[in-house]
Length: 93
Image (cartoon, rainbow, N blue to C red):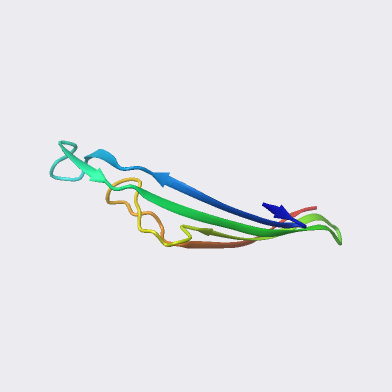
């Protein structure tokens, strides 16, 4: 969603239940394990400046991944990062 230079984006990623081979010792793929489903949300918000001094265009943004700090893993025994924040500036000269 955009409004007068402001931008807001909320995305959700759903991964359903899975049955996968367990490649950890001692089963080495002989055992089937179930992974529960999960949903994570990411948020992006920013503001775009037009023609600022010698800069043609600039954007200040904040991005939050795993907004609700959900514990999840795509691969069993390899947890994904907790909530992560990004703050940045993009510019075109």
